[in-house]
Image 1: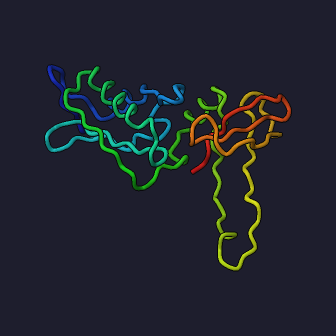
Image 2: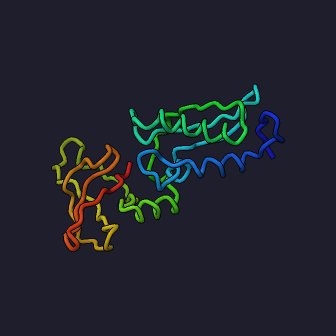
Image 3: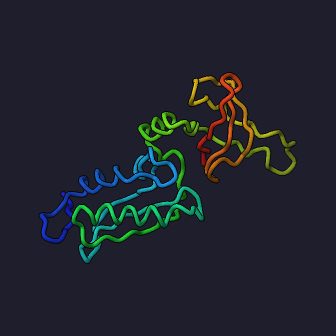
Length: 179
């Protein structure tokens, strides 16, 4: 068992640190934790004994990353870890595949359609191939469950979301884009 040393407290197991991080909400979507969102990539100990939390932004330039780093550090310090370091890892790039099932369920309960897992076919971009309209994913309405929805804007309330409207209940909603 790998342990994190803290000041005036017994060593803490890495599994406990993961559990604490699972309580840190995403600042833009507070119903999903940074762990369930897949932003926290690793937790470890460096040579100095500091707890190192590795995070990956949902997209390059995400404005919430500084707040996430500060919230992660504050959460661990509040639990007695004196030495905490946040490392940012850009490669491999974050993907919606890293989101947990619990995180996707939380998004849906909050009114945001969770990402649909799909393989993107880029063959139409090849030289000499006739380009076809990009097929939008079928996105179910998080309010009524209808699949009778339409894309209204590629950009929603944040750059990682698109804006959709349900054609049955007529409610607009965000869709967390796959990437």
